Amino acid sequence: MPIETTSGFDLTHSQLLADNGMFVFMGAVEHDSIKPIIEWVLYENYVAKKKKKELLLMICSEGGDMGAAFALIDVMKSSVLPIKTVGLGTIASAGLMIFIAGTRGRRVLTPNTSILSHQFSWQNEGKVHELFATMREFELAQARMLEHYVSCTGLDRENIRSKLLPPQDVWLSAEEALKLGVCDHISSL
Image (tube, rainbow, N blue to C red):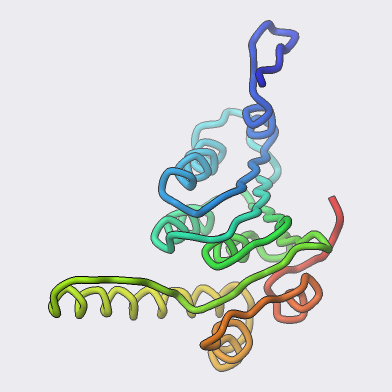
């Protein structure tokens, strides 16, 4: 719903939030859903005339495409402005990967947030040579994912494999996530 401002322009709630350094991401991690966040971070870093003290990215996501997630993660890591991430509701899989990419010390979970961490999953059909190529991408993605967890949590590879990326899905409470270095604080908004 558009909001009429004193200047006579109609703005959406999303635009008003973005103008104030906030972005709410709720949904699946896909190229189309991640593109506006990438554009927002780039705009605030390189185009905006008035620089913000920090950017706030709120996340409630069931996960999705790892390629799209890593595109945003790379942009977040290159941001000159600190990016505070706030996890709401459920953050899972690729959504969790984005959440932990927030600036250290500024990754917050609300008390009722559920976290799902699991190994990279994929499906493929095709000829044998196509399956080998897909397996290579799977191995590369698993290695990137493991290194991302190491750099963002401070845990060593062995602890990440046993506590955050074992063969089965791992559901964590906000308190458990804090103990494992997945977040820095638990706080209500």
